[in-house]
Image (cartoon, rainbow, N blue to C red; front, side, top):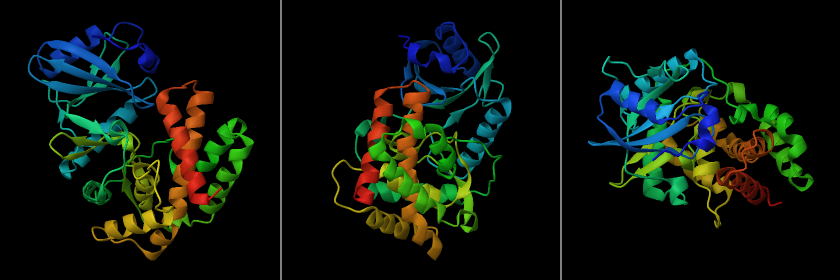
Length: 324
């Protein structure tokens, strides 16, 4: 069953995806495709769930905006992540021993293939992780942050360090009553000595949509597309601002940051400055979710349910944290 129209524009390929998926199956030697369908979450690449006569897989088809260097960077990142023992769905090689399959019959679009993990993301579960799950997630974050890898920089409009550029892009679309929330978040972020904070390799997008709980209870970290060399607390800021968000929650942002910071420090000690500035960095993360959703809705024309979710999450998180 082919379900593709909402995501077709990302690929630079106007034809049917069926022959593309059939050629992918042949290249990776996974058997005959019985069904496939696009996973309608995310804003960049196109993820496709595939079922064959033998197993299930997920193909990540890179968007038309990805350069050859971007794709090479991604495959190098995946090698580093897998070698470090991070819980990521196993990536499969083609019959020629390559990670990436390039389909010359479909505008040269490129893709990678991974094993399908039965389970749901915390976005699909519509909840925050419990204390046991959070402990596992922080272990994975620590393992990622200890990887000795400084990848070529890739620009991510949603990344917290790009908060000023994002505000300039979307400010005219933000309602007047919401602007004080953004102004305060940016003001606090501007006081953080970002350049002097410890930097490392970070996943950069530990959101509910990128953390999957398998049916057997294992936790998997998905999508390293925007991983970068950033302040270490960026990882914890996203976890605090997004992954731990609950619709009804009496825990303050400061309390969450204290809890996340102290738990993570048992695995990978934080500095005093990192603990001090984590709440303001997390606040900036909430502002980026709010503004990023504005970018999707008003600039990219994506008024999806997912966009509405991030817009509401960012606004409510900011209001609660700032008591406005």
